[in-house]
Image 1 (cartoon, rainbow, N blue to C red):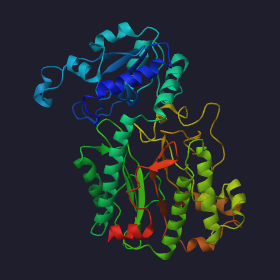
Image 2: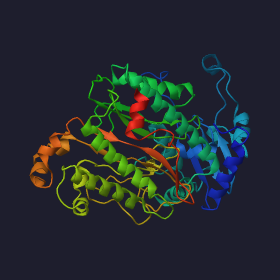
Image 3: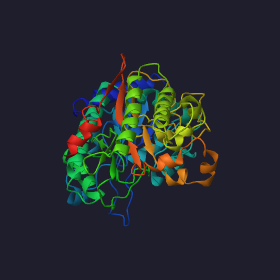
Image 4: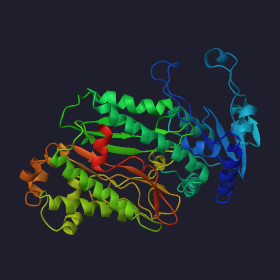
Length: 456
């Protein structure tokens, strides 16, 4: 976590920058915990990311009001009885001093400071219901904000889309711990019998560094299921294990890494062919990241490399550029090349495409582009993921319509020879710099030989 002595300075700088972009007050809620089954048994609390950006520390059931660079904190003092269960907790005044608040008041007084205020919806239902009631208008998650709420959201995107030095300190910490988690997962694979054992080894590293996972870990031999959240499959010789695991720091900053490795410690010839193809796409994309480069073009570079490689392997037929225009590559690479990364693992996606898409742009209806999460020119200070992949998704490849439509462009008999490749993804976190880029996760190898060495 950022040193507590620097928090007020960081927050003061961020709120002053916000004041340069809006001329109305903004109120941001932190959110509250949600019960799993009975009230006292709650899911782990995670403060709203927009609140975290301007408050610096995770607070439950709190709100901050920002106007002309000033910050008011609204939070109740802890109930004396809570000490029995949770120990001594800081008072409102102590918290206010820690975050550099100009004023601190109980939550009951918030209603008196909401005139002409904008906000951003918090995801948990009790909080967005409270927001709607107090502001006397609908404030709903998963819907594009309107009016001054939209103006606030655009201002926040302007600030958060590139990272200040304090954010980069946290993002580097998350990356470093995530790298060690992946190395631990590779080392554990040889003796593991279930996916769950590898997951445990990886998350143990994250927990031991007083961090949490930034998202639900994906550790699976069924890599063709893009967001597989099951861990009960046994590890068999000949399987590939895909692990998409990232750490989140105490103050909420995330990392996102994927590696794919052979359970046996050695890629089969067909697995190696596809792995090297995905790695070529990964490396070529990173080589092309620089300020001013369109992220959509980075995605299309990956598509072209994958199409060329699949033609060379005899899986696709035709000219690669024609195949990409027809979205043939997306039969095996259906998702976008990556996304923004910051306080959220898919940063600011609670705002829909407002952050990911440059104003005036909208999602394509092409299958090969419809899942692109970021469509902006790159700027120094942006942190993005690069994560090309190859997947044999039964719902796509076994669809009779797909088989009929592409019967001459896909060599289905040749594809059957790659049946031991269910899914491969290689993902790194890449910071756009003034000169080009920096891979924050570069200390985790990607070359097949080095991966095999880490396992054995």
